[in-house]
Length: 288
Image (cartoon, rainbow, N blue to C red):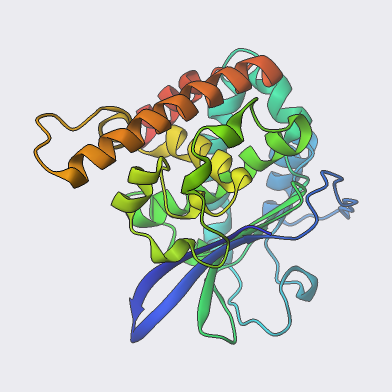
């Protein structure tokens, strides 16, 4: 299970969680799409189901959300803008590069579920997105869609790229010797949130959540490579003129991140034929 926790000030301190279900198989659920004359359904049928085999669930259905959790459905007028967002910043960047269309069509999850709000849990945490075994990705906060809001934008992109990356290691395993790059830096699913961003870099990770497991480390690396505008400045390039132990520790961590960066790019080229830097270039051109 993949669980991501952040801090958020909302009357008190809530916890933001992104999680994947326990089953990490890649069997897709059965898609049943009944005929509809609804313009949104027709748009989905034409642009998602027929093209890529992706069913988009935007009408609230109990089975997509645990009954013990509270959510708001997406507002109807925001469904098509959200579909266009996914098209422009997820589908087209992958299908627009060499070997990308073949890769995307063979690995795309069978269902995308839209939730209007975050998912409010009984324990006071807030879930921002989930993925189910590479077969379903749930995106929350659809009612807050605002591509000019970098926090909203990066949360959505991190969720979709991170969960899409899980499909690669599920089908093709992790890169060779991945576990040997920063073996002492991993924490656990229950303690990674005690780290801050700088401490994660010192350990050789792009985020605290990446320290939780090998698989999350891989998925976070892929997501950050794709969407983080200052990826190289923050994680790859050493800080110059270090005069403190903390600075030196961060640069030592960056040396490990550089090894992971090379490993991820090579792995994608080898098992999927996709150059992630070409995908990144399209994404960065569209968000900057």
